[in-house]
Length: 156
Image (cartoon, rainbow, N blue to C red; front, side):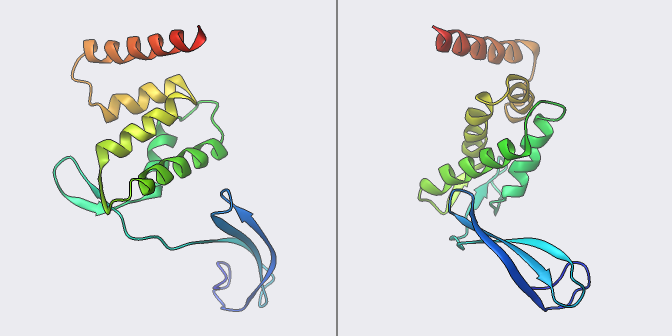
């Protein structure tokens, strides 16, 4: 493994432990050249998955894009990085469980919204405002009312 500090290919593993609910291995490494310590993750390689965008184009599935989107929606909200990571893990698992090689970005967005609604209301509304492309105030208010009704129903 190449050291991110000195770029030599001589490192040794000093600690390994399961991560991401046993779907990955987290390894602490130390460069034998400069002594720099860093972390790597090892995951099972899965079949490629394509996302069908709204305009019909296809692109590879990206955990980073989902993480970026939910972090933007949750900016300045009391959401931990672990919650963001768990949400992305959950969404990816739901996508992979579909058992398809292509999935629409709308379906992925719905998975994100379902999970985000259980974490933070404001982040949910921020994400929904982009995902649903609100055209006017009434469509925004309808989403707010639906969410409030769901919350009220859950409290009874």
